[in-house]
Each structure stands twice: as structure tokens, then as C-alpha cells.
Image (cartoon, rainbow, N blue to C red; front, side, top):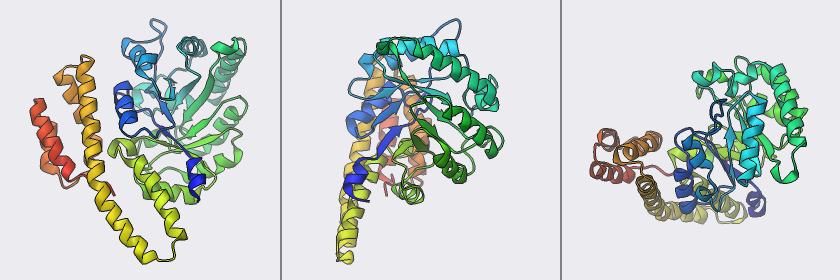
Length: 353
């Protein structure tokens, strides 16, 4: 792959409930800033209240400056979807995303998220009503509609019928996480179903699932060279520098394929990693500090801010297996001073490559 070809590849930040809200997105964008699209944690409209206070703050335009942000909606009610879509269009949003992927039991039991996939006929009626409603709106209040989907609830064979529903409507993009609802995050993504979806889907397709390292990204690119859009979720939470490492790896791999002296390239690669590791750890530290300061600034309070930081380290700690004592101190910290000391110690053992 040439550098020009790589520059055409787009990366999205996946919505992670309670984690990737506007404080996280702004800190990430300020420090790493290479994401092409940020999908928000879901908005769950109800008959009583369209948006909760937290959801309203998360999509407020003043909290999302300089980023392409797509609000995600969790519902199985076409009227609620259209009303929410209209409100978001008035705020200036150009696209909304329908959550058809959440596997949590509390969501699925209400036939929402991936639970909605259980009934393709009802899903068909939902989209029919949604796009009929959108067609009646003036252009300035009309949003594109993308979907983030799993491949079914119980069996991978379910996705054929689900995809036929998607193909009947002017959906702007289908983001596929090729797991079943019952898988949660267990087992491996079903790449066979994803390959078939690539052949059959009439819409642009984005891949999502288990890209945790530059190597796992490269493996997906070798398997599916025509896929040019990837959504990163847990991989970014585990290593906030992941996308930067992917981009750097692609550029150096291009150099390797055009350089006669491979031995010299390997020496350069080793030196580059040594030099960049310290820089990335400093950037991750600054990123965490920004999140901490921003949560405190918006009135989260020290106790709740500590909870948020511990939540991030629950993911990041997977890349610091040798920092068991420091990670334990993070989990048990009761003051910001205790947390700060333990966080700096854990970062010393943080594995980037």
C-alpha cells in the first residue's frame, strides 16, 4: 500500500457508553487528533423526555468544536427517532447513527440495540417510516442515517435477512461489528459473515471489532484490502496512541518495501521505537491529565473524576501487565494525589509496541 492509498483510509472512534463522552473526545482530539469521525455514546429518547441532561451536554455544539461528530440514537420507535433526528439537525448535525449493536441485556430485553435484529420485519417497518419521514423534511433539517450493527442475535445466518433490510433503504453507511448479540465481546469476530456482507451490501461498509494493535489492523487490511474505513473502540481505550502507531507503521512499512537494505531498515525501526516510546508515554500522561482537569472543571468533583480515571485504567491496564502493584493502587486510590502517583508508575510499564 502506498502512502497516498493509506491517506484515503478513514478511522472512526466507536461509542463506548460512559467513557467516550465529550470530555474524552475533546482531550483525545487535542492530543492525538487523527480521527475522521467520532460517534457519541447513544442517546436513548423516551416518551417522557427526548434527551437527558447528560445527553444534551454531550451533543451540545460548544462541546464538539473542530470534530466531525455523529450522535448515536438507541430506539425502536420511528417517531422518537425522527423527533430526535430533527432536534439534532437543528443543532447543526449532518448525520445520525442508529444503534443496532449494543449487546447489553437491559437494552436487548427492550428489543433495542442488537435486540432489534431479532425481528427483521419490524426493523423493515421502522426504516420505512424513518425514511418516509425524512423525505418530507426540508433539506436543511434532513440528516444522513448510518447504522452500527451486529450480525444477529443467536446465529450468524440471521445477517442475510438483516442485510436485505438495510439494502432496501438509503442508509449512508453500515458499520459492521461481526459478532452476535450473545457473544458480547467473547469469541472472535465472524470474518466469514463480514466477507459475505462486503459482497452483498449496497452501502459503504466500515469494519469494527478487535483491532487492538497495528499488527491486528494490518491483518485486517491483508484479509480485506478493499475496506477503507475502520472503527476503533476498545483498542483506543487500551492504548490511546493506537491510531498514531498504525499510521506510523504504515509509513515505515512503505519505506521497508522500497528500501534495498532491509537490515539497515530494521536498525532504524528499533531506534525509532525506542525514541517514540518515551514521547508517546508523555503524550498519554498529558492526555489523562487533560481528562482529569476537564472533568474537574465541569464540576464532576474529585470522587466522580477518580471513578472515570479508574474506568480508563481498567482498559489501559491491559497494556501494562507488569504494573500490577501500580494498577492495584489506582483501583484503591481515594485521593487525586494517590491516583497521580500510581498512574505515573503504571505508565512506566505501559507497553506501546
